[in-house]
Length: 240
Ligand code: GLN
Image (cartoon, rainbow, N blue to C red; front, side, top):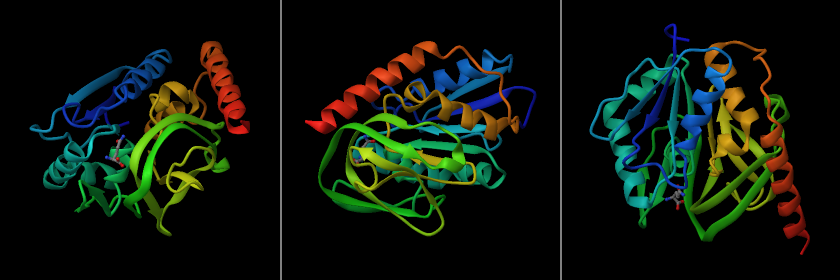
């Protein structure tokens, strides 16, 4: 951690915050505070500079226009690159995931991404809308991914990243893999919000940010019940 409190930044709530993705900020802050960690949350609008030294940066999903504008402003700002180079955690969802790569398509035009992750996004044959589930890379120690997806893009992963998950329902990157990660940078197509539906993923980001490998367990009975109900519904729907 860079200071005595955990600093979490929500990037561009005015552009990139679809499907309740701000919930990721609330979940991270809540799970940290329940463990006695002081937390400072910052919501940085697209006409403001990002801090270069926060611990966790969150980027949500967005429509094509806001996504293109957000990527241009983040490139011009430069502080997300500085933070990532210094070991900050970056978590991107959908549009916020695509723009971490080398390029993406928005409104039929190819845009440069931030090149923080070795991946590129194209337009897919159809919009991927619905439940998204997958088996997460076992090295991350996180149970099955649960989420909701709504995107037109498809993502090709390069050799410099690992898939976050192997798809068991939905589309994700390409119907086979979903999301990507490298070091402390992680992206996913999963809304829901992702960290509310996958509290173990929130704890992974907290472990990365704090360097604390054994976080005190929390009472996750409600999460676990909702996750198993959702898992059963998605599995039943896949059988129809
Ligand atoms: N505009 C992007 C796409 O359609 C991302 C959409 C989103 O963030 N939900 O692929």
